[in-house]
Amino acid sequence: IISDRLSPRSPHHFDNLLAYGQSKLCLIMFIAEFRRNYPQIYSVACHPGNAINSDLTRNSYLYRFFVTIARPFSKSLQQAAATPIFCSIMKSVLNAPAIYYNNCYEDSPSSFVYNTRLTQDLWIQTQTMIELAFKRQSLIV
Image (tube, rainbow, N blue to C red; front, top):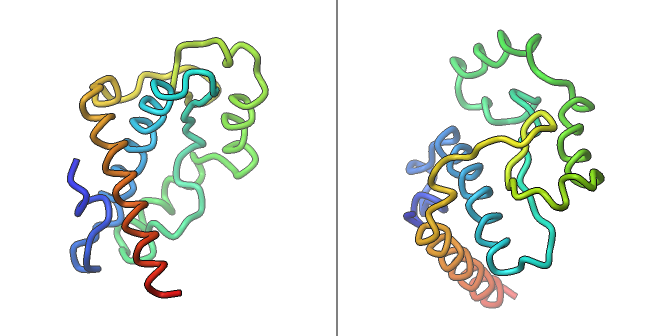
């Protein structure tokens, strides 16, 4: 895990699709580590759906084209809300060992999620990035 990839220092080092993919992987990895650190707190990651209206494609005509083609096969906002709502209200999810849900079912995340060393590294880098952000913010105020 490289913090410059998670938070690039300049716009020309930023790739929106790479950032999106990394953010989703980091979310699930973070949830895995959160569960290890705070087992008494219920936490899961859930995938709401694909190609929901967003600005991910704003800088690329090619990606915008593919999203337009996929739109009839994508979920509506109401359908996309189903999995997060399911995960927040179903008692069966509370006691399940699964950490990732997709379409209201347990799903298998990337094998990186089960690498404790990686999830711990992400946890530490997250704390460091937050501390740096607070320090920068306190300099501005």
